[in-house]
Length: 156
Image (cartoon, rainbow, N blue to C red):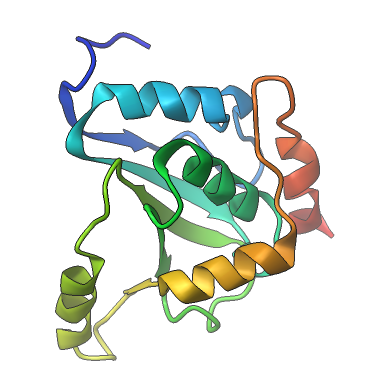
């Protein structure tokens, strides 16, 4: 990865994951720590992920891995449509920051949009943590990142 240096970036946007192919080296704790070093203190890592969170496959492990690098409670999941309304494989955005975000302000802004017009929902942190415990995710590392096995349930 070409980069200017540590603490230089306001945000990094990853859009290399899909439901058929995930470059495992972009999912690991080591890579997340590298990205964290590149971000400004209030910077954001935004990752577009196509997966099914409800079945506890890849996405739960990716979120847990980011929490290992950025801190528990510093990783947020944004869904298209209400959380339980879109089971199955779909786009989700994982928002991560080296520091706590004012996610309540963003949530209030989203709630002001009429339900018929609203497309994005932030999963409450309490719900996200509860789901992570239920799914028994693994921490993805350079030495162990079974992303193909974790996405396999999407094809059953």
